[in-house]
Image 1 (cartoon, rainbow, N blue to C red):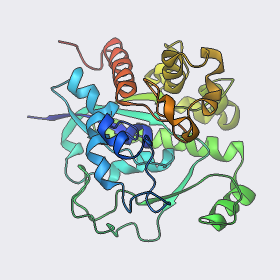
Image 2 (image 1 turned 90 degrees about the vertical axis):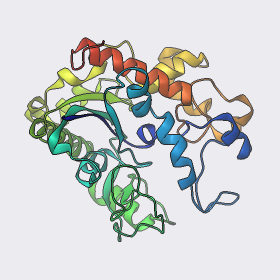
Image 3 (image 1 turned 60 degrees about the vertical axis):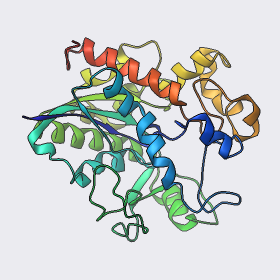
Image 4 (image 1 turned 30 degrees about the vertical axis):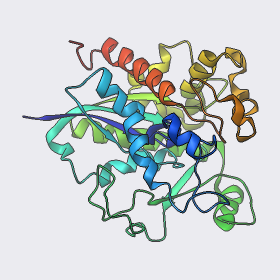
Length: 304
């Protein structure tokens, strides 16, 4: 029998960062963002993966809505859109060529620029695979830059990107080619696509922004799979901010002022207080519920 999958692509909002039970939050003194190697932080955050995968929107989508489908979470913290889609080539525990289902692409930041790490096949000593691969390649195989000049860490890489490569045309063109590559993969492997927006902000709208900077390329993609043409929110961050009631729906872009590590005493119901903010378990459930509505409305899956 052909295996049915719901595949999740994206960054930390797909991997499930922030989806931790209260005992995990308490064990880290109220912090919901664990960064290995930093002062007071553990050497590895791998032990959190079990909670992230269990409570991610990917797993909750199959658990509560489509139990006949198997969830396959390919999200990786911190990556951009190119790496998110390229993750499809590293699935070796499942045969997607003899399967069917839905690929849900939760868009990451358009400004993020992905390349491989210097040694992407080194598995950092982790013996257990990540649920989709056999351990030959690392889960964290990507190196991602933002267009911000800096002196430490990945300074040379980030600074080169900021000075020599970044432009609105550059990032928009990368995004469009990534979407077209996803579309090609989905058609070749009998998968439907659902496209959603985690936290990006473009006042004119994502399609309009891409149209301005990529021209006719934008219409080679079938935008009927983009769920925000039918929602009254343009990103899931906006929806969760609205549900939390700490900012108005119109002011959702100022979420950094409310959700941040200096605000640990006021953990919110749907979003965590960390840099960038991430959904809580309940927040990921909202995302799963909203995705299910769109999937059923599009008749990608019939609800029994």
